Image 1: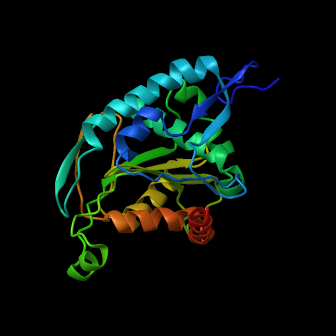
Image 2 (image 1 turned 30 degrees about the horizontal axis):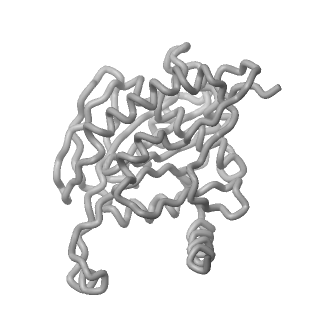
Image 3 (image 1 turned 60 degrees about the vertical axis):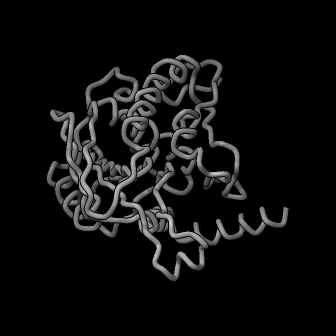
Length: 274
C-alpha cells in the first residue's frame, strides 16, 4: 500500500497538480502553448500538466488545497502586474502561509525531478510545517525580487514584427546550482510567479546559522534586487533592478542544468514534425 508523501498514512492516493489549475490559468492563460519539463519523463517535455501521485485525498483536498487557494489569491493581487526597469512595487504576504506553499511547491518539484536534483530528502523534513502541524524549522531563508519586462530593441522589434514588451507571464521552478561548498547539506530553489521571483535557501538542521548567512550573502550578490522576507513583516517594498524577462528565463534554464536547452530544442523539433 502506498504511503502519502506528506502525512505518511497508507491508503488510496490522488493526483496532486504541481501547478494549481487556477494559478496556472491566471498566469499562463495568455499562452497558446505551454510545456512542462520533468527529468523523470523520457521525452523530458510534455504538454499535459505535471502531477505527483503519492498524496492522499485528505492532504491534497484539504490542507494542500487551502495553501493552493492562498497562493492563487496572492497571485491575483500581485502576479498579474508588470514592472519596468527600476520601478518599485510592494509585496504583501502572510509569511508562514507563503513559505509553506513555496516549500510544498518545491517539494513536489523535487520529487518529480528527484533523479536530477537529489534534494527531495532535504525538503522532506518540512512536511509537518507544510501541513501546519509543526513549527517553522530553523536554517531556512526566504527572499523575493522583481523581474522587469523586456523592451525589444528596434532591430529586435523589426525581426519580431512587434515592439511590445515581453512580460514575465509564466510560473517556473528550478534548482539553483551554486559553486559554494559546504560540509552541510543544503539546497536553493527558485520559484517565479509572473514578475515575482522567490529564492528559498534551506540547510540541514545541524548547520550553524552562519552557514545560511554566508550563502545568503553570496546569493544576494548574484541576484541583485532580492530582499529577505522576515516572519514578523507582512509587507515589503521591492525594486525591479536585477533581471529582465529574458535574463530571468535564461537564468531558470541555466539553473536547470546544461542539457535543458538541447532537450527543449529536440522537443520543439518533434512537435513541429507532428
